[in-house]
Structures are given as structure tokens and as C-alpha cells.
Image (cartoon, rainbow, N blue to C red; front, side, top):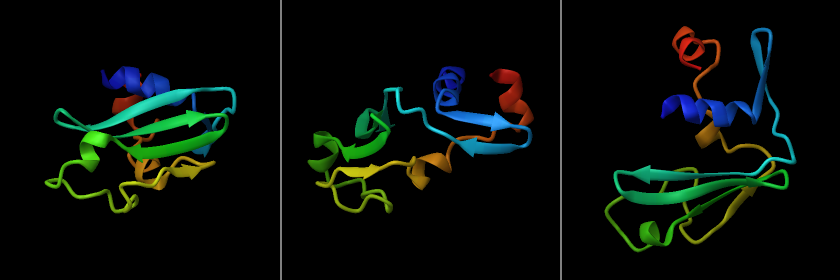
Length: 103
């Protein structure tokens, strides 16, 4: 499953030599659900050169799990032309030996 995620994310990022340049093609469409156990916290989408993140209705209607610090307003749809740091910081480097072997 992890390999499938890496494969999907590699479409959005390219590596040149040792430095990783974050480059997101405008013609791609992707959608990722952020889950905790069975609860979908929210959905990260990429379409038409724009990243969006929005909390799910199920997450909005619960009060046991706090909001993500980078996304404090449950009712807001967050938009950016670049992948949000909360998500980009969680993508493992393709330079890591384990990632290279499993990819």
C-alpha cells in the first residue's frame, strides 16, 4: 500500500540529482482522504493547478479529535497553488535507501 502512495505522489514531484524540486503538473487530478482509524478527517485534492483541503462532515460533527493546527477552521476550504507544508513535510525523501528499494 505504501508503494502505491509513493507511485501516485511521484507523479507530482520530480527529482534532479540530489535536490528535490517540487513541481506539480497542472494537467493532473488527485484526491487523498486523510483518515484516523475509520474516521475520514478531510480530503486533500489537486485539480487545475490548485491544492485544496477541507474537513469531512463526519469530522466536523465530532468533538473528540482536535483540528489540525495548520487548518484551524473546520468550515473553511483551504486553497493553495503549492502543496500545504502539513502534507509535503510527510512525504519521505526519495533519497532514503528504504524508499528507493521499495519504489
